[in-house]
Every structure is written in C-alpha cells, then in structure tokens.
Length: 78
Image (cartoon, rainbow, N blue to C red; front, side, top):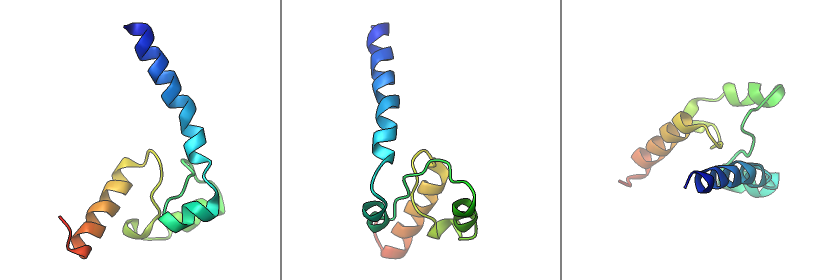
C-alpha cells in the first residue's frame, strides 16, 4: 500500500515538467503560462497586471481561483 502511494507520487512529480513544457504559442492561445516560477522581466510583466488579467499558471491555486471566479461572474455562468 505504501509502495503504491510512493509510486503514484513519483509519477505525479515526474509528469509536472512534461505538462509545463507546452509550446509557448499553444499555451498563449489558452491563456495558460507554463512557468511555475517566473523570473526577471517575465515576473515584472506578470506582477504589473491586475490579478484578474494574469495568465493561469500551474500550482498558483489562489490566483487561478480568483481569475476563474472573476471570469464566471462577468460571463454570467454559474
């Protein structure tokens, strides 16, 4: 049982870089930024935007939730 959990955790961790390696053009179409940690100029560009206009990013649960709720509120969906 414990070995199964460790195996699943390892597979999950190893699959993250593959998901984050989306081509930039494909990622831009969906409003998704594959970088988990943005540095330098990219970080400054992201931080200069209001949180509702920033791209979706993996592991950024709070920001992604705020953007999702904001977009649903303004699109009339529930």
